[in-house]
Structures are given as C-alpha cells and as structure tokens.
Image 1 (tube, rainbow, N blue to C red):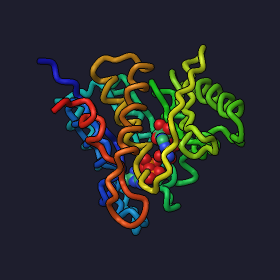
Image 2 (image 1 turned 30 degrees about the vertical axis):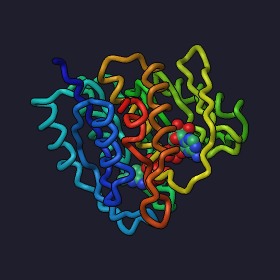
Image 3 (image 1 turned 120 degrees about the vertical axis):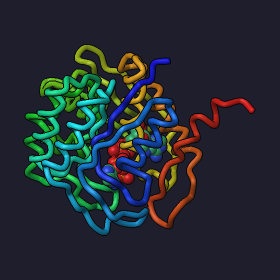
Length: 268
Ligand SMILES: Nc1ncnc2c1ncn2[C@@H]1O[C@H](COP(=O)(O)OP(=O)(O)O)[C@@H](O)[C@H]1O
Ligand SMILES: Cc1ncc(COP(=O)(O)OP(=O)(O)O)c(N)n1
C-alpha cells in the first residue's frame, strides 16, 4: 500500500477548530498521513484569541529538517506563518527538500480580529511564498491585502485572481465565504480558465476554521495524486458537509464537523 504523506506548517489552535488541529483532522478523514510543523501557539477558543506565541525561526527550521530527512511529504499546506522571518525560512526549506504540491492558505486575521500575520510580512508572502504555490486559497480580505485591490464584484475577484497568478501561483482560489451573495461563490483561476463553484450559503455561526479545513483537504487529495481541479472540487464538498452538519460546540464561532463528509459517504 502506498501511503500519501501530507504536511501542515501552521499555528496551533487550542480550541481545535482551526490551525494545525483542523488540518490534521482533515488529513485523517481524507486518508492521508498527516505531519505538522508548528509556527506558533495560540491560546484560542470559539470566542476569542487570548494570546499568540510564535516559535523561533530555528525551532521551525529544525522541525522541517526532521521531516525532510526522513518523511518527504507528497503535499504541503501552509497556514498561519506569522512573520516575514518564518516565511523566508519555510520557503527556503520547501526548496531545499524539493516539496511539491504546495497549498498556500495566506492566513492573516482570525474571525475574532486577532492578527495571525504581521502587517510587514505581506511583502514576504508575495516574494517568497506565492511563487511556490501549486494552489493559493485567499479569502476576500486576504486577496485584497495582497493585491491592493478592492473586491466588491465577481469581476473584481477575477482581476485579483489574475494578479495572484502573475505573482507565481499556478492555481488561485478566491474563496467566497466573506461575500454578500446568496450562494457562496469560490472562483478558481488556473491561468487560462475561470471556474466558479457555487454552493448554498449556510447561515450558521459555526464557521471557525473553514479556510484551514478547505486548504488542508486540497493538500490531502493532491498528496494522493489528484489534479488540482479535482482536489479543489472534493475539498469544496468536504467543507460544505462540515459546515452543514456543524457541531454546536462553544458559545462563539464554533468549529466545523470534520467527520461529516465521511459520515455521508459511509453506508451503514
Ligand atoms: N456560510 C457558508 N456556507 C457555505 N460555505 C461557506 C460558508 N462560509 C465559508 N464557506 C466555504 O468555506 C471555505 C472557506 O471560505 P472563507 O470563509 O471565505 O475562508 P476563511 O475561513 O479563510 O475566511 C470556502 O470554500 C467557502 O466557500
Ligand atoms: C492557529 C490558527 N490558524 C488559523 C486560523 C484562522 O483560520 P481560518 O480557517 O481562516 O478560520 P477563521 O479564523 O476564519 O475562523 C486561526 N483562527 N488560528
């Protein structure tokens, strides 16, 4: 049996709904072997982020060296990277260990408003991270911050996708969770064609970690050898199930249900 190995480089969410925890749950559900490199610890629950504690660059590098020396990943997902220094170190190790199938979720701000990326690190995202991306998955505010554009319309989002493709990403997904449309519209651009994925918007508070989970699902299926368009379609079905069958945990923005997708597929 060939086992697909997938790595997340991200922050820890003590509440378990986003970050490393969401990524590893998603990898497991999609039957890929999950590994993790921690960039920061957050003290976080469904209501708020109480604290953000970044690791040092050498602590991040040492974790990547341990994995690079023994467990070369078939795909990688990045989430909260916090600083320009960590971004540069991660980019350099991704090149050193020749890691392919890189999914970049350019995490910047938690739903409660806490900063998970320093403002001055956006240039490092553009210069060092985006050129490595097989797929990049910004939400609307993240795409605005990277491109400097204001994204009011679908046409604006398509323009931003072109911009991100020009910065070096092979495939761009501008996620529509923060949009105003009745249906959630995720826009995919592969450098030639735009594809729109339309899904019924769920009116729930329980969307904590949707972006992490979606990107992790793409990485898991890329690790198994799927094309990026197929991996994005499966990831979209995975996150839709996870939001629809939400768990109602905590009294703020609760997590999604990481086992909902498999529950629906398994016939009992
Ligand atoms: N209320 C919702 N109903 C259905 N799908 C959603 C909803 N909110 C987000 N999604 C989906 O979850 C994924 C993450 O989207 P988004 O919320 O925009 O990202 P982030 O969590 O990074 O802010 C996307 O595929 C988006 O379409
Ligand atoms: C440690 C950590 N990483 C990422 C996030 C943000 O996750 P995201 O999927 O964008 O979800 P929301 O913040 O929108 O709920 C996080 N909160 N913590």
